[in-house]
Structures are given as C-alpha cells and as structure tokens.
Length: 142
Image (cartoon, rainbow, N blue to C red; front, side, top):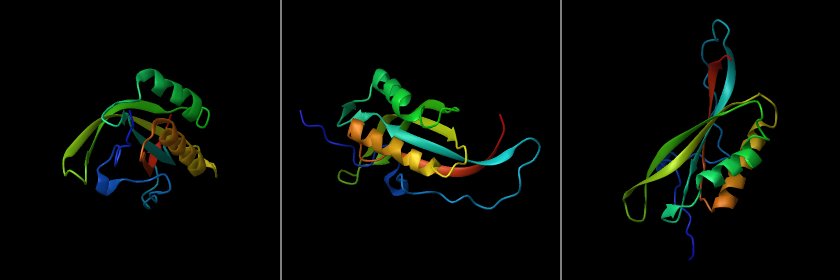
C-alpha cells in the first residue's frame, strides 16, 4: 500500500508554521516575582499516515526517547491533542489524533536548530508533510 502524507498535518492550513518560522517575541512588561522571561516552543505532531493511525504509542515513545529528550533533556510537557484543518482539495474539515509537546527553551544559540532537527526527524520517520511549531515568549518559574 502506498502511503500518502497529510496535506497540512496538524494545524489549520492557513496558520501552519513550519520549522523555519520563528514567532518573534512581542515586547511586553517584565516578569514579576520569581518569574523570568523565556521562550517556549510548542510542537504539534499529527499521528496519521494516509487515512489511518500510523504513529502508534510505542512509535511515539520511541521518537520522544530518541529525538526529543536528547535535544532537550531538562524537561518538557506532552499531551494528546486533536488537530483540525481544511483539506484544500476536498474542502472538508479533517480531524487527526495528534501529540503536543511544550518545551521551555534553555536560551542557547542552538535552540532553533534543535527544534528544526526534531521537526525534520519526525517528517522523515513518519512521512508527514508538516509539523506545527510555535515559539512564544512567556514568564516562567519552576
């Protein structure tokens, strides 16, 4: 069977951000209390290949263990999600089981390169057309 990649993956097609996109942090007030300003990356991974679930739980865990954790070992948050987007060919709304990863970036010069490596690895491993990437500034504390 020939697998066809998803046209737009996880996000609404009009708002898909690729790995090379970087949402510039908007200037805002300083952080208060024990909070400090950091960039936070959100990655959105579609799990379907063609019209079926192609990235099962074991595949996902293996990917996280091999590709994400080594690049950002200080921690991350994972959650299940449902992506929704419009298929431009059919005009239909498509929903897809997805995974969402949120990482408070350490602020090193290679943060963006490591994110791009993760996106590329997922696209290659699971025949995905896109992976959503959002980077925003936030006040954080741990």
